[in-house]
Amino acid sequence: AGPALMLTSHGGVQFMCYEYLRKHFHYSRPKRDPSTQISVIERLHLSIGYLSMGAISKIVASTVTYPLQVLKSRLQQRSESIELTSSGDVRVVKRNYVGAIQTVKNIVSKEGFSAFFKGCIPNALRVAPGAAITFVVYETIVDVVDDQ
Image 1 (cartoon, helix red, strand yellow):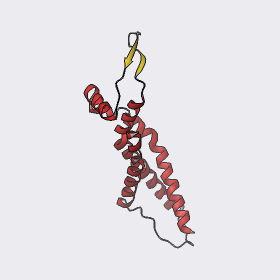
Image 2 (cartoon, one colour):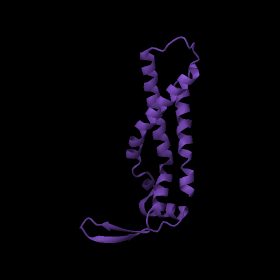
Image 3 (cartoon, one colour):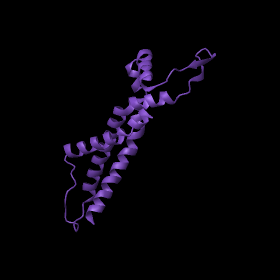
Image 4 (spheres, rainbow, N blue to C red):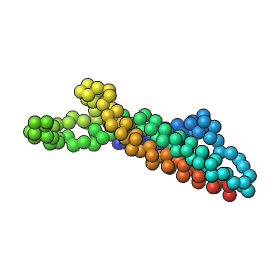
């Protein structure tokens, strides 16, 4: 339950990063007269910015919390599994992942610190587009609600 509970910080890291980027690149939500309309070009420009900031914030959050994801996955694995070797033989592999601290020690000693980031790049590339679209929709809804 420890690593899974700590993964709830992922959303906090993502929104913190997004808000930082939004303020850093001056994408503040302008207070404007509801009777005036934003041009299509302006809206496209804003959307591209929101897409970029949403994707970047998701990549940062995924990278920061990825070691916790690896730890959680290792703790959820079965204690024994059957694997095929490169020569085609079948072998039983025992995994000794008992607790979070012991699992961290096992990963670092057997695979090195980089094992906590195996698969991080493909994961980030997989989740970034969805987050980018989510933030564009989020900003659009905030814009519509502010106009009313």
